[in-house]
Length: 429
Image (tube, rainbow, N blue to C red; front, side):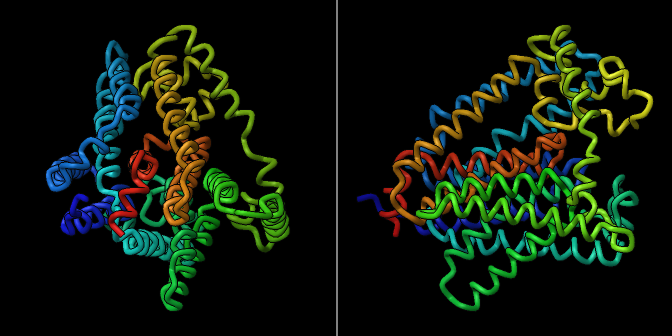
């Protein structure tokens, strides 16, 4: 039997905490050379992890990872023969180049041991972000955006929707929707009464801050994650749980509708109420997505080029050209953006990569017997689903923190669903 190395287990746990700390506190706020420096540091740490755990090298780089590498490779045409090469190169540098580093680092770093301390750290960081959001929402001020970081959304949303450290309510909602299932796993696994109480407080802070973001995409992501957890974790009464979720959803809409009456009206109540849901700009979003048909007629295989939906917005969406400010000239749905900017080839590669990953998760959950491993895989898969559902409402992969979160979660669920992991974890314990 192979002897395990305590150093590699501690190193993995520390690296995972470091990754989440960066996404939670720093990635949304820093620019310039810092994202590239972070990716460079990830690469160095990845090499260290692979050197310390040389026997796990074969499981870190698997055949199934070729789908992700294929997707990254097929993004290269998105910077060739484009109208604005500077924009395309910038998008490629900040959002495409980091993909394999984030994915393989998260996959290699996810620990076989010390998992519970890692979850505690991750949920604590999300709770801190949530508390900052509460303070900002209540006071209508954020010290960081007033003195250190230029935030284009600050004046528009302060005191109305929580932004915390994530620049905008939508990315904050995505981040919290991803962490929420993990916080549920922490509540389930804690045995000490004091620690369990603390984990419940983390969960409550995260849930309430999601509501304060007033992000419909994040709320839909939470529901998607809850459905996945119900399907794979509930041993009985699944139908009753689904009905309870639907009843809770109806109650939230009803309560927010009542509280959005004159005298109580503010964004979270209004946006989650009947009137806010009914007045959502469905027509404008449909027009943006419908324009992709014309885009694909002109650029079927490789699309407009990275970052070019905004550049060609006036041409392909003339109905909204004059009434839309430059920052809002987007598809407002990441999947529509990928299709428009990378064409049928790039979008097919993305679908192939995501489809292969979820197929692997499904097959693993069908045979996984260890309840702890099943819990962690289900909760991270639910978080990944929550991210993807929230991306239906904005261009999430072109925001640094949500993008980093998405590719990191892909790496984690790939690690949790890889063949032989259950046996490895059992031997370590």
